[in-house]
Image (tube, rainbow, N blue to C red; front, side, top):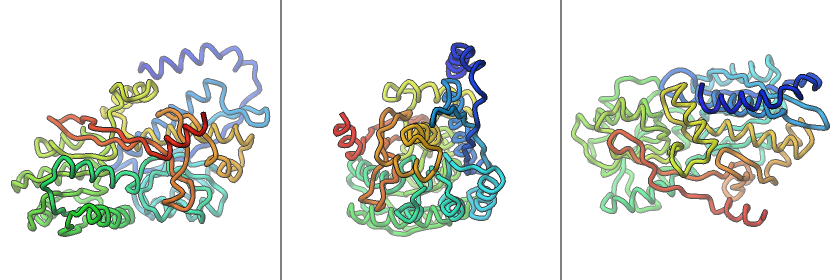
Length: 399
């Protein structure tokens, strides 16, 4: 039994008497639309797992209280396979069949765009981790992003990489040929150029690709100082890095969406060493909160991989939803969405807020740290953690 489960059992026993005498609690279904097969499977499976941990803990502590009534959470998850077609099917299952009004985790710009086309007109509130800017804005009042995107990550990540490698002047970029990759590629081009780095080429591959020798050869033909692997998941990136090692390329490796060193090092071997990542954190370290440390232990036990920001984001969105339901005294998605940007609420990171109106024209971005890590001797080492300035200001004002 994991430490997390031990805590939940203790809570359950402590509250058993009150739960037995209370009126039967109604269930609020929480949806997940994420890849649960293929190279990105661990992202979706981990997101489902952490959402269920949050729901279970909230339920054992008495659920959500709205209008004097108690509600429990139940998580319903589907595999969107990182495609628009599957994203549409998942949206129809969640919203039309399961009657879900709150989706607490979503991955992939293409499948989330498909979901959003139905969720917004159906009055369904969604929390997503899609990296595309196109899925946010005033035209999507029921959509919120619960983890960092390129607009939060790339600038601090690239600046850090260049500070450590001041002689690097050129870069070749690789991205998946889908909506996520195309949106991120534009942001990356601008970010590298703004820092004085010349983009030699932008390259594409299809998700599901297993043979990356031609891709690696194309990346190295112009001898770039840096190779930026864009939105490639760790499994794909590991293969690319292995092929780059075979070709003898020894430049600076950047994986902005790198969530873990485990698959990267297992697949890439020694070629993965030195890779900088902008979407991972060491949740076993003293920098992590006690909640994150427990969740990390559970992830290792369940999936043999450490916790990453993408996975923990659904845990945080469940708690954001609970706080907004109780603050608005409503289970109406529109009322909850209206109050959420005004609140300070608890997450696995501690207190935070939704913001970034200056970027998206609407305060829809959860403010969480940007954690820059590097693969060293096959292990992930956290190099620095950057707290958003908006979060610092909002928390100071709330005191």
